[in-house]
Length: 552
Image (cartoon, rainbow, N blue to C red; front, side, top):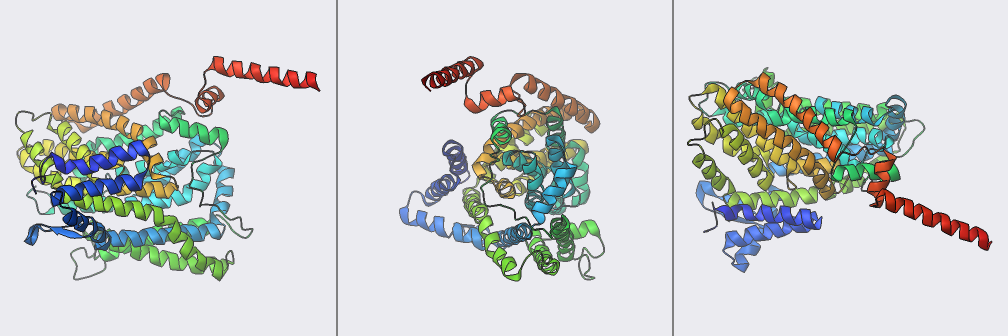
């Protein structure tokens, strides 16, 4: 076990991430990362390596850590999320088969006339669904894909908007599963305030989440893209190839209306919120959360509440669509199979990612990073928020978990700033912002995987197109945490952050920015030729046409 708690603990996720970015193949890359981690855990013993890949335990007593595919699948939390994914997949298939998606697309086509309007509408819906990131990803994708498809917006852009309004929005919402997780992490720590109060105090300093909102709105209004995203947008606008996996065709049913899509989604939202409150003990006189909204959300278990709520919503939607006669019973029943098939790729990637996460945890990546964090504390007091942000970002990127990241860092940060309340708030905010940022960038993050599923695109395409955007906001956030360490003024930092974000976007637009609707850029990017080559090819075609005319 000589590799545990050392730099080697970060090697498996680094291997998986590098391979995924190079080969564009997610499953093999994640599996190789798992094998590398198992080899390190087993000390290169072949038999023990196979055990740790399938199912095994590291350590003894309270320090026992489960690893392997079977451990990842059998974990109650993971199993609950798998059930939730299946339920949402069936719901989407049912709504599509009943013609609800097509009807909503027709309605949206009459009211949303521009690409900017479609993008902002998608963003607004993502902001409104702030309860849970999983719920956000799949719901926004199901509702808005007909609208963005109509305006020839690539699925890569849709998946970015989904991901940008999932974890970042949940992290600044006091009523969300993320607020509950942070509150639970800080509940037993001596902070002088409750966990939810500590969470709320960090919101003005959570620069990554706040600047992501500014970034999405600004780049949409300015009408340009850059990097791999620009190529995807050009492809979608010029050729109509949106990047979908191709299994989300929508059926046009004459009797269907937009309510055949909106009502099931509204039911899903209401039932999931009800489920989270119920599981949190809001209506249980013996529970701590009885009658207290914030406490009930803080005590809830999303892995139980979300499947519970989605099942009720699915049953009611099933009955409603049958009563509307937009779908037959046999066709509705077949959606159970088709909906499950739709979610298989996401569930498979999630299984690999969760298994790699268990392996990385067993190798002590958290212990190694915590040691680095404590070593950096001395002599860098005002710089610590920025350093904490980078450490949180790196840890979340390597492990694929933001919840695990702030669970590790918050207990470390609290003693460092115990005598400075404002710096404590900024330090905790840096933990949360770094965790969200790393999670947003990481190819092995469950939220990133589910955002890909929500937009129905290849996971690696979502990662490669989103990464430059997320890193741009990360750079701005790092600068703001540097400033916050000295000024300790949230309003000043937010104001400077907004100006800085817009300024950076102006520079990017003038240098590498591309408007996908500009024919000049579209031709240059899609053909890979410059203007002279294009003119030459046109002249050659003209000569060939003239020769054919003379021959005739």
